[in-house]
Image (cartoon, rainbow, N blue to C red; front, side, top):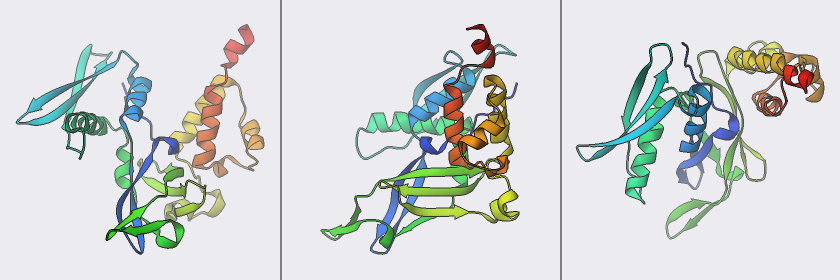
Length: 240
């Protein structure tokens, strides 16, 4: 059985300032434990996985186990957590859980993220007591991946919706507008949802004012999948 987890959606990825000076700041992309729990539920079912913690040589480890229905066995993967500046035990527990989920493939695509630099003219950097601070908040507006589950395009915005960082790799632009923006796996997921609901691709293109499926961006994909998730299946609609 293929237990390959899905890729992260744009609204499931958070941004954190890594380094800041008078010229700008760098950002890191990360996921939180709630996203891990959500994807584990989606992939293995609410009763198909479990977590436990162990203290080994003074370090807190987390073990995430999933149930293999074919063999009737629990398969486990484990990792150790690091300590934050506050709430040491809670910090280690959360970090070890997220790291164990990385071992199951959840969010592993974030390792392919580019170096993200936001120049000072695109954000609000202040200096107090010899240290630089930024009051701006950043979020991922859109993201897309290739078939190797690597990030090929990324757009970040601030709290006002202004773009502060945008990157599209040559892989995503080499064939111009005819190059598929979302990955083949994402398109397959979309087609599965269309089949389930009875919604046509033409209806999707009309709704989002695009001319061809290849123009479906990561943002439009996320919006379409959320809308389809709220739509009854074609079979349910016929029997209602």
